[in-house]
Structures are given as C-alpha cells and as structure tokens.
Length: 150
Image (tube, rainbow, N blue to C red):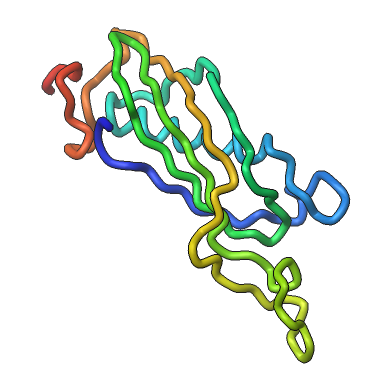
C-alpha cells in the first residue's frame, strides 16, 4: 500500500433509491469510489487525475436508502503515470426496520450501527495523471519513490 487509506462517509438519501423497496443502484457506490480515488490522487501527486476504469467490481450486500456508508480506498501500485487502487464499501449503520429488530414502540426513524460493518462492495480501479501534471505529494503520508520531491 502506498500512503494512507482515504475514507469517505455518506448517507444514502431518498434520491439515491433506484429500485423497489429503496434499494440503491450499485452505480452509486461506484460514484463514491470515484471521489475516493480523486482524493487519493490529490494526496499522492497533487492532481485530480482521470479515472481510467475498473478492472473488477463486486457487490456483496444490498444498500438501501437510509444506510450510512463508508467508502475506503488505497493505492496498491504506482506506475509512471498510472495508479492502481483498491476500493471497499461498508454499511456502518442502517435503519432498524431493515433488521430483524422488534419495532414495537420504535419510531420508523430509528437506526442502528452495523457492528461489525457490512462489506457491500469491492473494486480495483486505475487512475492516470500525466507526467507534466504530477506535482508530488501534497500529504506527507503519501510519499513514495516515484514522486519527485518539491
């Protein structure tokens, strides 16, 4: 791993629901991984980068409106202009009515932490920063041999 992990938290809003029952489209997870990848690139080489694509995406658990999600990413490999990153998405809290909890006397707005968090997706992605746009790390936790010193 090159540098630290980047973590982004977001709640799935009503507008994120795509299917019956408030199920969120997996593309929403991919959208947030794009933001995580962008932050990784800013920290490692000072540019927002271009996302080249995903080599592998796996959805491992459903995500619903009202779920609190944690999106995690890290750099696995640095090339001359490309960066291979790993991504994970975890459900860290969910609405109680999505669990087997007895809802007697509990408001429909009740939520609960997912302990442990539920892995909802994994991916490998590639990002690109042109050599001329690589400014070096903007976060000391992301120093690596490829980055030219400022």
